[in-house]
Length: 40
Image 1 (cartoon, rainbow, N blue to C red):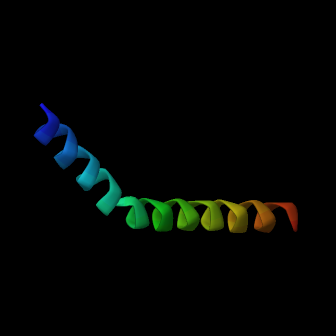
Image 2: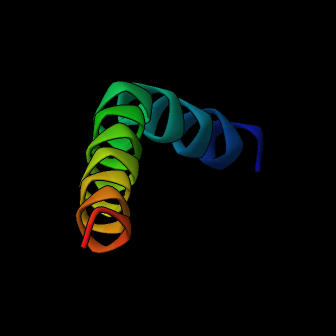
Image 3: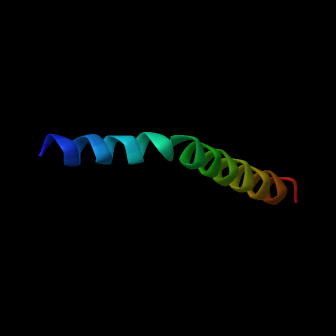
């Protein structure tokens, strides 16, 4: 059981940077769309 938990944690941590970059891109895209709509 501990080995499974360790592997799950390692996998989660290893993808942290990718998830953060994706979240930042999503927010930037939505902000750009919102600013575009508000400027009309």
